[in-house]
Image (cartoon, rainbow, N blue to C red; front, side):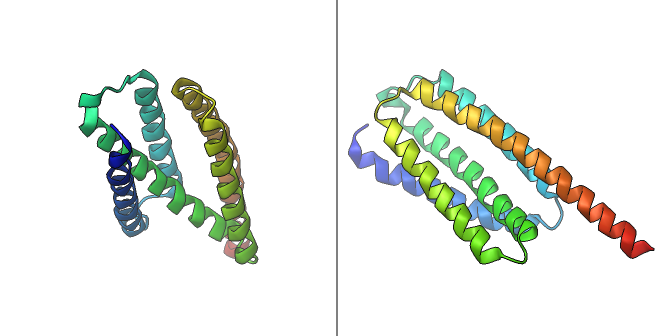
Length: 159
């Protein structure tokens, strides 16, 4: 497709991510964080399957935009819900928590960009799928601990 199409595809990603973040923020009062994360995991897993199976050709230009938009939606879910969780977990040290999060996020991006030149797309999809599974397992543990703590505090307040 050429370098001239990278910009518009990234604009599509950013636009969908921004609009989705606003929409998620508006409806997050009515839907629990775990439901968003489960939906994001399902959607992201499906997208990884599409990337694993898809063999792009020059005539697939619309598909590049669709995949980019879907990645933008997944990014919006992960970013908004992660920030929400960090705000709850680290309410007493938010600056340090968000700074650490951004540092590790940037480090992960640097590693991914570093190995992207040397690995084929299929291997990168496997790495993303493995990261998704590990992240969701750890998130589930944290979410369960948060729920248990909030129930325990609710029991104390009820007394």
